[in-house]
Image (tube, rainbow, N blue to C red):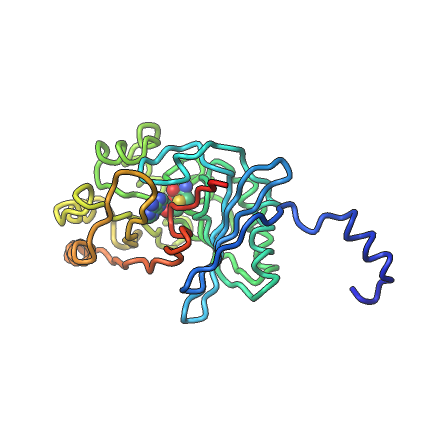
Length: 290
Ligand code: SAH
C-alpha cells in the first residue's frame, strides 16, 4: 500500500476497519499452538486457535458462535453464556488473523459453538477459505449431530469434510453427555451422516472423547462396531482435556485398549494428538473467562 500517499493511508486505517474482531489476548503454547481471544464489536468473546504440526500442517480451529447454546456436560464452552451466531465476516477474520503471520492450509470448525446452527454464515465463510489457501477438502465441520444441518450439508456442492461428535454408543449415555441427543437421537444422527457419506463419498470422522469409567470400556467399543459401518465412518479418539467439569480423562493405556477393541470390531481408529494444553487451547477448553 506504499503507493498511496501517507495521509490517505492514515485516513483509510481510521475509517475502514481492518477486521471485524479486535484481539484481546494471545497465548502461545510450548508446542507452537497459538490461541487468540477476540472481541466482537458488541463486546462478545470469540476464541480461535492455530495448530502447528511437524508435517507442515497449519490448521486453524474456528468458532462459529460466541459461546454455545448446547450444554454438553464435559465441554467448557457449553458451560458459558451463549452470546450469538457469528457473521461470515467474523468467522473469516479469525482465519485471516493467523494468515497475516504465516500460511495456513487446514481449517476445522471445532472452536466455540455449533456450526450447524449457524450454517449460512459458516458456508459463506467456507466459500472464501480457498482464497486464504485452505481448500474445501481441507475444511472440516464438526457437529453434535444437528440433523437438519447435516442433511443440508449433504446437498451442498463443496466437498467439505463432516465430523460427528458421538462420544457414546447408546442413547442413555449419550443424552447424559450431550442433552441435544434428546432432540436428535443416535439412530437419526447416524442415518443422516450415512446419507452425507453416500452423497459425498467421503468418510465421516467420528469424534469420541475418552472419559474414564464413562465411555471407555472395550464393551462400548464393540457396541460402536455394531453401530458404525467402517466404509462410512472412521473414529478419532480424543484425550479428554480438563474443562472444569467432574469428568476425568481415560489413561493412555485405556485409550490404547479401546482403540484395539475398535480395530478388532473392524473400525479404523486414530488417537488425536493434543495441542495447546498448557494454554487451555485444547478441544473443549475454549471458554473465555476474561
Ligand atoms: N459443536 C461442535 C464443534 C465444537 S467442539 C461439536 O460438538 O462437534 C469440538 C470437539 O471438541 C467436539 O467433538 C467436542 O465434543 C470436543 N470436546 C469438547 N470438550 C472437550 C474436552 N474437554 N476435551 C476434549 N474434547 C472436548
